[in-house]
Length: 154
Image 1 (cartoon, one colour):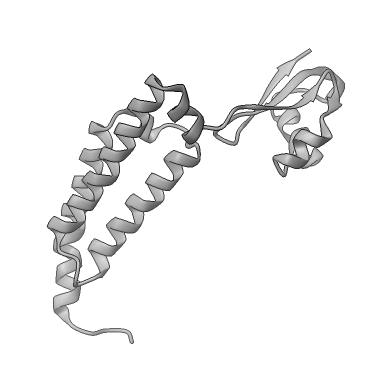
Image 2 (spheres, one colour):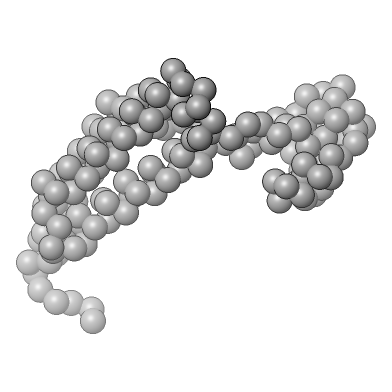
């Protein structure tokens, strides 16, 4: 179906900017952590916020007030969990992963790479990106908890 009614189009034109503005305000108010590089916990919240925004925009059965409440709940929960993670090692261990050493002194750590589903090609690409031509030129490569690879030159 290409067109149902002008009501639907007008609703999106009215609700869209309002929901978008609320989302931007929530993200700014929740701090830089929400907008930083994503770990798995942050990614889940970001995807859920996007899904909530899409539901508010495209579903006639989801009023703006309910969508905004949903976004507030998600950002609030993220804030609470992040706050607890800073203050409790147990909570931190539940929501954050530890960095993983995948190359040491030019040698691939195969078991760590397999556990993290990381290929030698991906590690070599990170080395090249850091200006290291060969794996022997690296003291270490670490898979960070946000999924990026950090290279420590030899």
